[in-house]
Image 1 (cartoon, rainbow, N blue to C red):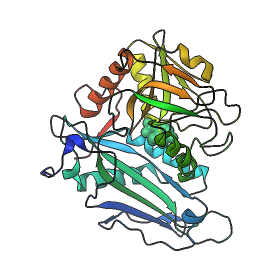
Image 2 (image 1 turned 60 degrees about the horizontal axis):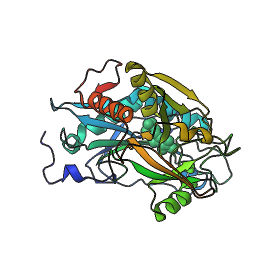
Image 3 (image 1 turned 90 degrees about the vertical axis):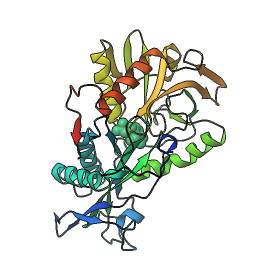
Image 4 (image 1 turned 180 degrees about the vertical axis):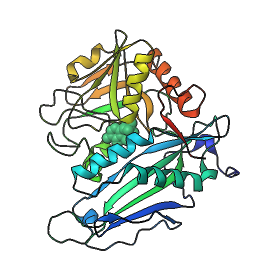
Length: 342
Ligand SMILES: Cc1ncc(COP(=O)(O)O)c(C=O)c1O
């Protein structure tokens, strides 16, 4: 199949571009139906659907990459399937079986093959699985009916800087999740809770926010829509916290750090420890690795600076190159992270 010719692949932003098909499956009468293919961008939904009123909405984000060999690889699909299952259980929705998730994702990618960006452009096909309560309820309770849908859209880097260091702002006045809340699930409500602080950070010229733990504001949680990591003494250090999303990119970077002969620590990270890091970064499917140049703390007027001459640090660079080489098929997939969609 031919790749779309009219796109400026190298300059794509991280946004929605229409593709041709999405895949859908409905849960009714206690079971999942057949997977359907749709070319509509809209969902017919009851006005009392629980997703609209009570936030029964979870989603995923993963990517497909075109290799030099022109083959299309999807990265760690099974981990996204598992995380969506956790999110579903966390907010009382029907669980999507892994087989259904895989079929819906691979079919959506295959049908939109021509939108998978060419090798070497830095762009990829973002895959967005969505699970929402469609059943009508007026009292606060879970729906009995759900829709699982997968759409895809070609994207460039999440932060317009790409693999260049960004400045971020500590947000003590906002929490994206409560200590015993839904932060570890990928559910819509967490993102609604983050919008005001994100907008504030953008208005002040920062790429994103740095959230501290919602209980004590003593530990680092995560960096906007991405996990946080630091590097020191040949060790990759990343926060463990009940209120952050377990990032699949972070999980992969921990493995790659071990492969590169580094140590890995996944533990609570006090904000006071941050200045001792040699490099810090944000990581996620969309952010890949986004090195952090400065962390500004408006409440203490302190500025913490990282990166040499505004360039990404050596470890972040090594990890970034390793990750994207595996994703595109330039390096062997030693951990079985890729599935072909073609
Ligand atoms: C809040 C949040 N944290 C972390 C991540 C990174 O997770 P992953 O690497 O699985 O994309 C994301 C993005 O998906 C996110 O939205």
